[in-house]
Length: 173
Length: 162
Image (cartoon, rainbow over all chains, first blue to last red; front, side, top):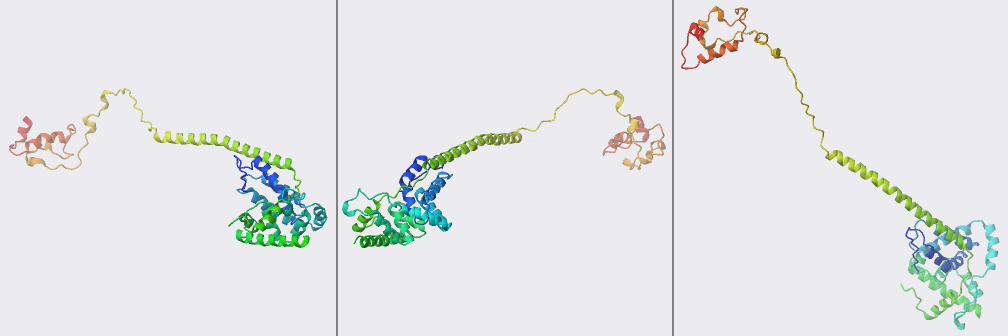
C-alpha cells in the first residue's frame, strides 16, 4: 500500500513511478471525475508533479490522491462553460471499462448501475468509497486526505457502502 | 482499527465493486517518465557539482588552517649576532684633567685635620692653585685610612713624607 518511491538521490524512482502509473492512474482518474470534467489532465499533472519532485514524498500514493483531489476541486470551480462542455464528454465515457468477469455470477454488479448508484452518494462519501475501493487507501490515509480522523472515515465509508448497496438493490428490483 | 469489513455480506459487496475496473486514464506516460528521468539527471548533476565544489573548498580551508598553525607554532626570529672588530684609538679615554670637575661645595673637614691643613691643601676651590687639579677623592683616600681608630694623627708634614 505504501509504495516508497525513494531514489538514491531523493528523486522519484522510475520503476516505482511506472508501478504507480499502472496501479493508480485509472483509479485516480475515477477519483478526479467527481469534481472536474477533465480528470485525465489532472492525473497527468499530478504524475508530472510527482516526477519533478526534488524529494520523493513519504507516501506517494496518498500524496497523489491529495494532489489530484486539490487540483480537481480547483479545476471544477473554474471555467464553468468549459466544464459544461467537457462534462458532457466525460459522462459519455463509462466509469468502468467492463463488467466484472472474474467474480462469481451471483456477485456481479452491472457497471452502469454501479455508476448510477455511485452518483447518488454525497460527494464527500463518494470520494471515500472511491479512494477506499479502487484506490486501495487505508482509512488513516483517507482520514488525512479529507481532514478527518480515521474512525470518522471508516464510519462514513461503512454508511456509504450500505447506502450504495441499498440503491443497487432498489434499482435491480 | 480493523481495515477489513467484518460484515461478510458487506465484504462480498465490496469485492464485487472492486472487481469493476476503472476506465484507463489516458495519461502521457512517456512524458511523465521523461520528466522523471530529466529530474533524476538534474539531481545527480547538482550532487556532482556540489561534490566538485566540496573538495576545493575543503583544500582551501585546511590550507588556511595549516598556515595559521604554522604561524602560531614557528619561533620568532632571533636577533642576529654580528661579530666585527672595532678599532679604537688609544687616546680615546679622557685625561684626568678633562674628567675631573672642580668641587663646588666645600667638603666636610675630614678627621679633624683641618687645623693642620696649610693654605696649599685647602678644599675650597678658589684656594686651589691652578696646577693642582687632581681629584679630591684620590687625595682623601689615604687620609681616610689615617682616621681609623688606633692610628695616631700625624702632622701634615708627616703625611707629606708618606
